[in-house]
Image (cartoon, rainbow, N blue to C red; front, side, top):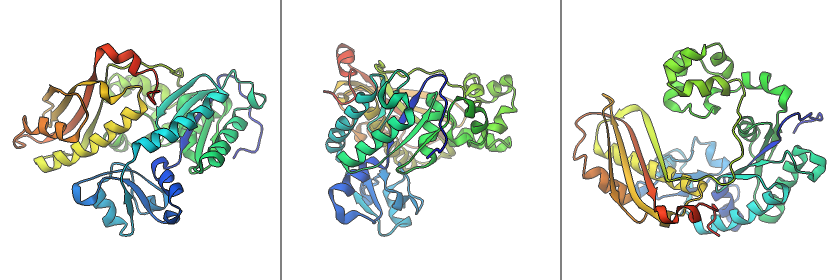
Length: 361
């Protein structure tokens, strides 16, 4: 927690992130699980994957999207509980009401995190750090779980700050501190730099933002494509994105580029299972009811960069539908696969209504 009084010149953005939300809810509801490694996800003997795990489990190297089989191998005492999304959504809906007490500008990022623009809020004499403390205190008192918070003048730095002292804490960086702070931040924390792009960065001796700051913009564009323009600003702590309270989407998708190409169908199906969990997570962060699905699609990129996309009409989101779509197009892997992606398109007629609220009130 910061000791000195911060001076806020521009916007005041608060990022609230519930700590291991699904697992925390389950532990709260079953006190016998306290002080035990707990995860929420699919069964190990059914090729399941973890959606989340508590911090005790993370000490064993566990993380979301890890296969349950691998997780149990790393942590033999791990307790894996099934996902109860209805319960989590109900709790989340009530928690979000707290956010609305402090600001009308609330952007849901997922079922367990949100950005708040409190620039005009008069609560706590306009002090965003005190607002974050009060919000976290309310969540702990009223819901029996903890949350972390990040406070800054833009979304990028606020998000990084909320991860800085997890769990159950908060951290803030005001405008004047951003230039020196961002230099120390790992490139892994920058949006758009996943495993593959971070590997590129390591090969170029770039690990922190200060390393990438030395790179000319045109060189970043050459390496990362058009996203290089955005990266040039992000690694300097510049982020002008507004808080989006009512985003409209016509489709939603996820994809992964693999460090090592996939060369057999079993590996592909395992990755599809992981992607499916990520897609469901992203659904929760959108204002889209999955009952409004009209079509699912699959994207496959081979190691020679040939790309194919396939789609089929579908009224729901089931892993088997994506697996069947893959199997109907790839009987066996002839060319190694470097990328897989899955997603769905919305029913146009109901799009606006379904996206109004993340919780489908």
